[in-house]
Every structure is written in structure tokens, then in C-alpha cells.
Image 1: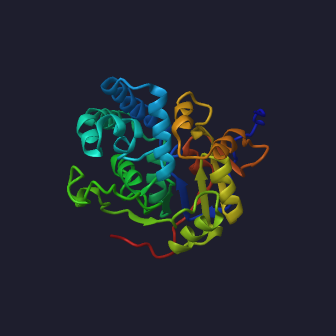
Image 2: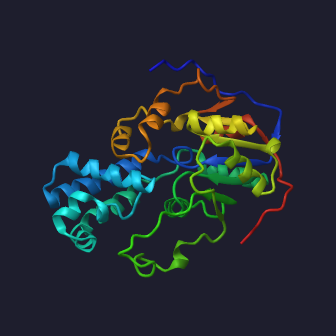
Length: 308
């Protein structure tokens, strides 16, 4: 892999902006680290209960993740071919391996944290009257959980994400969740969905998000950690791009397990690993989210903001 060129942090710019659209995973918080902790805890418990070979289990996880287009599929255990062959039905798998799901949930609650200066930065942007919009490729349920868990409901004006995956046939939509539907709803943030199958770096998705909240591209900055998705998308959409360099995760040890079971194609994994600042040169670079306040001048958003 080619070495990254030296890219200096961005100096103060005179332009003023009223809208911040930000990626979530690995931009506002570490996604890869907590995912690794949760998934590893679940897999270790599956291996302990089943005695199956680790590589067989991981192969089946990849197959399920590829099928559903996400590495966060809540019902993955009940679709693993190796467990179905061993136990006979999804219902038996769910009952026998409940401890694996609990291990995942326990780890999830312990390791999810905002990056340094994110909360302070978002609160200050709101205090200055900016419109703050989150955009993630994580499916709706998981994105919703993290926003609520991290106390960002109401700090983000809007959240855009893909809709959820379908519920398996052996489960009804009533009764499989722990809490009432009300507990899963945002109290303040408006949650809307991106078109099915439309992913970064498609510039139309970002352009439609900005238009959908009543903003102009000229008054908007977009912040994200991935050069080949976030930065490239913003450039193609004609939106001021900011590379959250601190969030890059593809060189971390935890990323290897994600690559092993991911829903991404091998071409997508290769593209992320090989894209450098030589290929996609960001206009602005930050090493902490709060540096946005040092780089840009922000003003009151003058459009109409929906409120719950």
C-alpha cells in the first residue's frame, strides 16, 4: 500500500456555514472497536456452546451478512447453516444460544463511546444556530440505538439512514423486542431514510439530504472518516468536504475480523485499504471533531427546521 502523503491540518477559513452534515460511525464515535468487542464475545460463546470450528462459524456469518447487506444482523445466529444443521430449527438455535446474544449485548453497553470533543462540538454548533444532520449507512435500528445511547437525540436535528432489514419469518414484529415501540423512538431528532440500495459515494444521496432539510449545498459542510466514500461523495456533490482523519479504521487490528465476515465485497474492502490522499485529496482535514469550530465560521440556519 502506498504511503500517505503529509497532509497538514486546515487553517481558519473565512467562509461561513449554517449546516453540518456528518457521518456517524468512526466519525462521531468508534464503531469498529465496539463492533469487534461485541461480535467476538458472541462468537466465543457460540464456539463454547457448540464445539464447532471457528472458521466454519465465521464463514457462515459472512454468508448471512452478505445476504442481508449488513454486519449488524440481529438474527444472524438463527440463520447460521452450521447451527441450523446441528440444532434443527431457528427456534432451537435462539433458545440454546441465548447466552451468545447476551454476551453481545453486554459488550455493546460497555464499549460504545463518543470520540473526544464530539459532544462539546455538536452542542456548540447547535448553540450557534447551525442545522446538524447525521448520515450513516448503518441500518435504522442500529443507528437509532447508538444515537439514543450516546445522548444525541435532539442534538442531531435529523438522522438519515437506510431502512431496517426484514424480520425473519419465524418471528412476529410484535413481542420480539424487549421494550415497547415508544422506547425505540426519538423524542426530538427527525429520522428519515435513504433510498434502498443507494450508498456512498453516490453524490445524489447527499444532495437529496441537503435539499430535503431545506438547505443549500453552498452553506453546508460534510464531515466523514472515509476518503473513498465520505470525502469523494462530498466532492462529487459540490459540498465542502472535511476528512475526519482520526476515525480511519482500516489499518487497525480489529478491522481484520470485520473483513473476514463483512457484507462488503472484496473489491470494496480493497478500495478502502488502498485509497490514500494521493487518490482523493480532502479540502479540509481535522484530527478532532471539535476542530471544526477552529476551522470554520458558523452562523444561524435561516431555513425551516422540523421539530417534534
